[in-house]
Image (cartoon, rainbow, N blue to C red):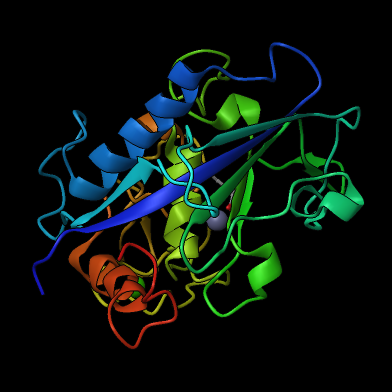
Length: 249
Ligand code: ARG
Ligand code: ZN
Ligand code: CA
């Protein structure tokens, strides 16, 4: 296809204090990371994998709100709840959160003080294409969003949001969420399971793991690519006939 698709983003910040009420600079740094990673202009891009792709997808904080008025593309709401879990409470005013802006026109991002599930910290989560419009979008903890300001190593490079937007655009985990599972992308190697840290050179399921892929679970500083096959899958969701065809028009 060859055309650049630009997706308008609105960021809803739910915060208890000034640390969690992240700055415009921190938010803009995340938009910058998304643009670098999806266009493969990220400074850490290397030549390890020849199938690395410029997805020709980019992002901007929206400048027009649902009523047609000017906006920063950021909403802020003070809350008292710390742990928001992963059951979409942050996406509804009725459960203490903020309702999405029209999910067929905007990529909604919610930022929360904390998420846990079964006692484990959750960095972020996403809804795949085809889900309920009322809960569509991605959610990240404030300290895993952006690469400046109040961010926590080793997830301080903005790659959690890159990964979640990958899911939002229909990408599966590279290990297919099972033992040598299928991610429905032919140019990503099969992985036995998720990788943490940065185990470069690891072999599983008969080939070298692509630990540098954004859809693995490695550290932010380890990741640097989407593949051509992942690009095709993401763009198919955004192009005419796809489930997110109206985004970015
Ligand atoms: N656990 C999250 C998910 O499955 C995100 C993992 C992000 N990884 C990272 N290195 N930032 O969606
Ligand atoms: Zn994931
Ligand atoms: Ca694959």
